Length: 171
Length: 449
Image (cartoon, rainbow over all chains, first blue to last red; front, top):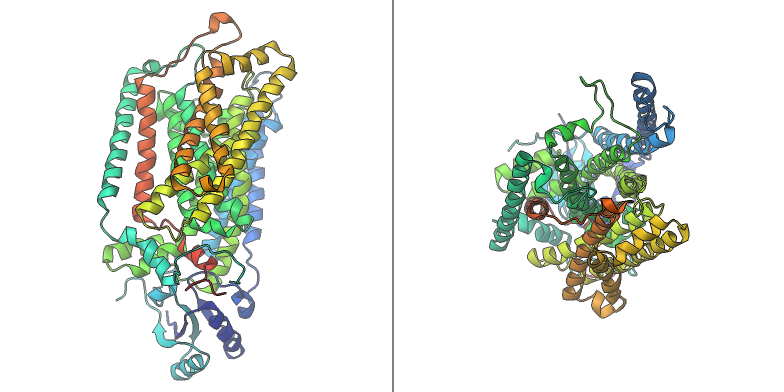
């Protein structure tokens, strides 16, 4: 992990957004670290909408279909049992379980899909403890530490620091 | 952050104050008050555990169950606890979809309540079989030596899937919401063991915007999935009754009636817990009177929905023309269990009417007492549904009074101990307020727009 770069700290989301708009021109691959989701950054970074809904939809569909097939197989094929004179394929009675499995598959895949897209668990240590508290930062990966530090300062960063990637428990 | 937005956090808090205030209770040694509560919870749980063990050894004969009362207080407790859980999902998912920002103050603890309530509920149908070690696995469809499959046409099995899915999804939703806050706790940690634990739990969350982007989509999707899920869970629970042919159970109004009752009882439990928690952990600037007032309004609204359902059931019983239906309902209100029926009606329909007055809605002692009454009333509602419908079967030779025994009551008490053990541990180990979400809706350093 050779990530090496500069962090510029801001104490409110408005100045972060303002600076991000200008940083984008020279460093389009910049990243922002914030204690809560700041709206507007996605457009500045040029992020596309998350592909997660496709995962959710296909998993939900899979759950629904598998739910029906399994109930059909156990009730009609593997062990046909006459319960109260109902038809073997009494599909309306299968709907609640199909529904629950739709939600179960969709929900579980959404969460794990999100972990996968976000590369969680992330083995890197957080840049700075204040970033999950009250500070907002722009991060630029660069070898030209001096130059980038000056740029960030000019854009209104209260504090800049040179950071490099560390593992979780490195001192 | 615009000037017209309402004040959701009072006391001119800054972002770092939020971390400070929310993390404080979990970073110091538990207070004496906490230890007292925790010991009481453990003690009551042990009573329940001891009595259940004895019940497994002797058999279900120690309970008050008889013929025709095959279902008793255990099923009442199951429905009661599952119902309690519904408020958590409603607050976290439905209010999220409706963009009700005030939910951020209470959603974390309400979701925790959901999870622990479902954990409590699940105990009852399993121990009610008397052989929990079989019941726990025989409910699941897996290839086995008996070469039998579970009966997918039975509502009892739908319940297994509904409550199982509900528990899984609620737990995941809760955990996803916790991720950024676990990272906050990790970054504050001075102690190396604490740091280690929260680093693992937070999965190394760093809050980059690319992560937030997927995270918010996931959160929205989970809210969208949980909303139909929560409506389905208590509907399926009501099918346990409604799909049978018993007068008093066999009604089409049951699914919506159960869902309304679940939200009603869940919100009152949230009010009970929040009134205590904001006092104990000095979170009055986050869980404000404004939040509590909003919950009281929902309690009153759902209380009236439930009242409407009670009336509607009577009308339909008369309108059906079936003498058995008519008898079941007249017997419910004026038969041997009249006291249970009228306790229910008073607690659920009459008492919440005090919330028409703003003074009552915003008074902590009043709302606390009302919420306790609603909890009691909703427990009695399930008692009325289960017991009054069963105790007088079609033939008078099958009529028998049901009296719960010491075992029934002791194990019920134990379930409250179990619930509170988890809830108290939660208050000590995890942030009780969703810090990252509160920061998103607050206006730091006052409300100057």
